[in-house]
Image 1 (cartoon, rainbow, N blue to C red):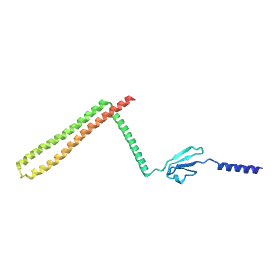
Image 2 (image 1 turned 180 degrees about the vertical axis):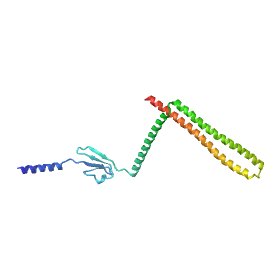
Image 3 (image 1 turned 45 degrees about the vertical axis):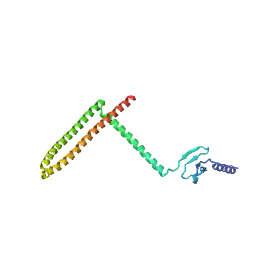
Image 4 (image 1 turned 30 degrees about the vertical axis):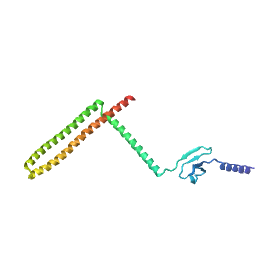
Length: 204
């Protein structure tokens, strides 16, 4: 009788194991038909599919593998996101540096005036040096006019040197002008941002 119970129990265990619920995988094939199987059907390869539990509930959705174009798009989006985060981080760093540099708006405006005045002095000095060279060039022109077609070698050499000096000094003047513009733009930008940060702090 004991052997019969054991055998019966074995049959029940075997039957129970066979009746154990299983997960199935389903997808829509190329024709839009729903295909399911205990293992992933070949028609579902390369397609989005769903794993469905014994109660008929979707346990998870497995997306289709990305195409090369989709992978490139995703990589580009990730790179753009990274750059945006780095840009935001750099802006926060600049804002902190700006607030640490100036005690208040009056301090900023004082430093702005000093920096612009210094840049203007440098520009004026460069322009005066250019004016001096132009006066020398005017004298050379007078000498050349007096010499006529028979210019002496020393005068010809002086003209070449004058051309070189004037060209170099004009480059200096242009550089000083750019410096003045850059200083003005930088301080105007700093002033605007400083005021914006001040208003933002007051609003909090």
